[in-house]
Amino acid sequence: MKILGISGSPRKGKTTDKLVKEVLSATNCETEFISLAGKKIAPCSACLGCVADNLCKINDDMVWLREKLLTADAYVFGAPNYFSTLNSLTHCFLERFCQFRHRSGSALAGKFAAIVSIGGIAPEIPANVIEAMLPYYQIKHVGTVTAQGAASCFTCGHGENCSAGAVSILLGPGQKITKENIPDLSRQPEKILEAHMLGKKIEARLLANAPISKKNCFAPDCQ
Image (tube, rainbow, N blue to C red; front, side):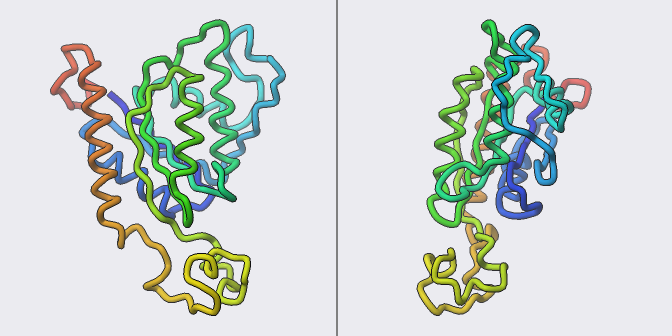
């Protein structure tokens, strides 16, 4: 049994990446983590090129990601809140799942997904969008964990003096940025615990649906 973790954040090594990895680390399944940062993923163009064979005709990084999605038994999708919605990179990635669903296509049907949802403000928003998209692909939502991340405003160099930025919104006007007031996952132990519980939950769902020969077997040749 394999769980594929996908972080849709364009910022490598930040909160979204970290919390997706925490979910994966709590399982005894085979896992793989992929960051979409730097990947070329175009939005769905509604060209209908995938109707005949459920194979997208856009030539970008979704070509090889397609195989990863097909061979995984479950997913952990992580994404940040950008401007009060799901960030565009993750949305483009999920739009391209349309290639799996034409003519009652069921390539992803019955697979499970956990959601990691991050935001400096309103971290639940990305999860709401992702959860609404999953039924289109017949993917079963297992659960969600949210956490606060640090907006780019904390490191852009102008955050302390920008009245429109996240620093002013979160901390108040004229506040200085310090190591202690930058949102950090390490200071959210309850969220790390929730991530571990979510990892155990998705593993349990996989075991409940696995063939008897694979239950309670985590050796490499049982995966």
